[in-house]
Length: 74
Ligand SMILES: [Zn+2]
Image (cartoon, rainbow, N blue to C red; front, side, top):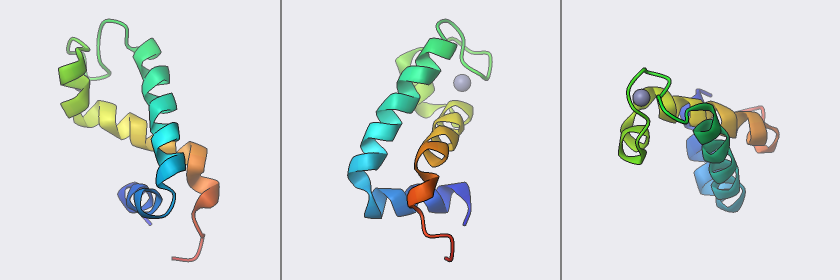
């Protein structure tokens, strides 16, 4: 499974946990990027919600948190 597959699986099968993990990941990443995004641009809410790098970090964190829920054989 790719990271995007895992995110899709979590959205379909563990939406409640996914929403909580996403909120936690966003909070942690906002603390890491008070001024600038990982890509070097100003970290406005509009930017980070569209930034591929930022969204990718969020996905990584969610999968790290919830990976144990995903069946290993897929
Ligand atoms: Zn960015």
